[in-house]
Amino acid sequence: MIASYNSLIVSKLSNIFIIIMFLFGKSHSFSIKRLQTPLSQISRLVCQSNLINDYYNDEEESSGNSKSHNINNKKYVVVTGGVISGIGKGITASSIGVLVKMLNLRPTAVKIDPYLNVDAGTMSPMEHGETYVLDDGAETDLDLGNYERFLDVKLTNDSNLTTGKVYETVIKKERKGDYLGKTVQIIPHITNEIINRIENVAYHSVDGSLSQPDVCVIELGGTIGDIESMPFVEALRQLQLKVGRDNFCLVHVSMVPTVGSDNEQKTKPTQHSVKELRGLGLAPDFIVCRCKLPVTATAREKIALFCNVPPQHVISIHDVDNIYHVPLVMIQQHLPALLSNRLDLPGVIFEHQRTNNLGPVTFESRKIASHHISMPWDQSFKSVWDGIVKRIDDAVDEVEIALVGKYTSQSDAYLSVVHALKHSCISTCQKLRLRMIESTDLESEDSPNYSVAWSNLRQADGVLIPGGFGTRGIEGKIAAVKYARENKIPFLGICLGLQVAVIEYSRTVLGLSNASSEEFDSHLSDNFKAIVFMPEGSRTEMGGTMRLGARDTILKIGSIAHKLYGES
Image (tube, rainbow, N blue to C red; front, side):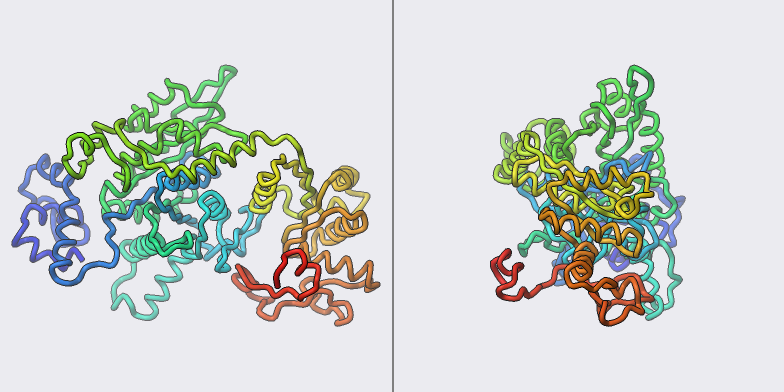
């Protein structure tokens, strides 16, 4: 678009032409040495670069080519992480989305996973944690589950962006000749594809209404400095330039470890992490410090000084027993007001506007009057959130649930199942005591954990068996089903859990001693096929071949399931 306007800009706005060439010199045959304008003047013009975007919009409207999306009004909050992986970027991003909802705005979310996999469907839960399945059947990263639970939205396949998806699309376009003989490169083709995908999500409604989101929260997976994330970091740098400073905010999550008997907080890892981020062309607006205890004033001031952010923009997110406290911890440190000030969020009224009636506030005037802000709280949503947190904190009665699985050594392998149980406890005002039982420990008395596993199962008020793959641990799951059925213990089987329940009933009640699943044994006799292989499944292709997502299920009238749900 910039190239198409060059001649017009040269004739009307020579200063803007200089700035365009300065900012985009790599994509034009233009040498910085030819600039005759002093660097101080160029710096002032860069600060006024939003004039360029306004000029483009005016010219497009006058020519009858107005864009369907006005990118200058869309707000983007990017969450990156440093020092270590698994630092809490997902909860931070989800909590920021909650703050957006509390401000009576509509959030959406994007999770960027830099791995080469097209999706998370073929990844081992022992390595990567659970695969979270969306309503449209997309197999995604578990953080999308956090987004949906925190924000009460329905995300789509496009909300999870991977290197595999991006490269697959670009290569297909190259094979079709869409690039018209150009040399296809990381910049601009890969980065443009990333930006296009992010903007597509930013304008797609995810809350059941037809209204576009106001704020798009983007989480960049991995750690700043990872080789595989470089194209995404560059794309985010270009996105910041494209949408303008007032519409782009970067939150960097970093580790503040403690050492010694006096728990001294060390800031050097955060300093190095921010240095790495700045070297890639991005500077944090906020630094979220993950730590065991609240960040001390000394550590906060040191981080602010060496990372070039105001001290109040250093947010302490220490360990809490209840993750739904995190948005409230952010509120205690005035993050909603600071975020609103930084992004000029709709509905937020600054004292500058209210008293002086001077119209729109500039970035500098907001910076001066950041503490004079009227917040448009959505009291209904905020009160519901406060109520949920209180119900969790005040719960006294306990319910003990045994989760019998085969990936129990990885705490995130059944994350959404565990959170579903916790949400049920919120509804019943109970505390969840979860017993994670490795199904293989229930199979043989030779197992060192056999007695403990059966003791935990017998103490449970309910038994849940989640999904899984392969034959390992199947007999242990069947044994758990048999115990629950014979002792009338409430039982829920999900995916493979329901299959083993059918197998157990076929063996024990129907007398089909060799009953099993065709998935486990392709040569199984028809007489013993308690579970058949789905026709749309594949024995050779693993990715995206299962029956997934939200589907209508017809319940037989008069069946127990029909009576439980009350509808067919």
